[in-house]
Image (cartoon, rainbow, N blue to C red; front, side, top):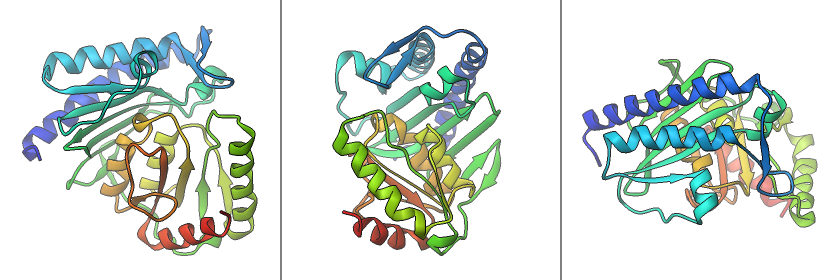
Amino acid sequence: MAHVDSLQEFLESAIVAAEKTGDVIKEAFYETKHVEYKGQVDLVTETDKHCEEIIFKYLKQIYPTHKFIGEETTAAQGASELTDEPTWIVDPVDGTTNFVHGFPFVCVSIGLTIQKVPTVGVVYNPIMNELFTAISGKGAFLNRKPIKVSSQSELISSLIVSECGSNRNKSIVDAYTKRVNSLLPKVRSIRACGSLALNLCGVACGRLDICFQLGFGGSWDVAAGAVIVREAGGVMYDPSGAEFDLTALRVAASNPSLKDKLVEALRQVE
């Protein structure tokens, strides 16, 4: 693991990159967007591509030996393998559909893995001016003030967030609605806010009690949020209860008290 001074430097570099990108997102948010389709409902804009270029260019100048994985370059060039080398994992605009529709739940997500472990995380929503940050072992912060997960211990009093994702295959949609239908009587309410990175940050700061999703874009959706949740006192895990796997496209996050209760509730649906 890198020295803690290095981690602080990595964090500050990621914050600068996120803020540079945030300025672009904020300006474009109120303008007409040029939209392309990656799938039936999965969108990409010129802003996504431009923002990824800004982040990579800035960080590569400072850390030329580091590896880089980004949503848009991966989408264009194919999967990038995660290695033990320090690797920046970037979603330049998480919540692109929200961005296109003018719904302000939009962010840039920048995570750094070292030996495949998420170690530095920055998630910045420039529309709402919220900057979530964390370094392994140093706590999690919102606009540089400490945050922690909720103390909720019962499902029936929990606010849950879960997304269907962009795949509209009937079996996937049916499985999602089945889970939602089963959970609704057991929880306070369920949200779908359109950004997995911000959903994880919502758990980290206690606004949301549980986040889970089966199927999403890639590691760039969760790399930064995973650090932030853990450093806020939360737990990251597979919805089955297994260990969290950054590359598995399956994620759950909550405080420790709710983990087993969510896993059992989901198990009853499968």
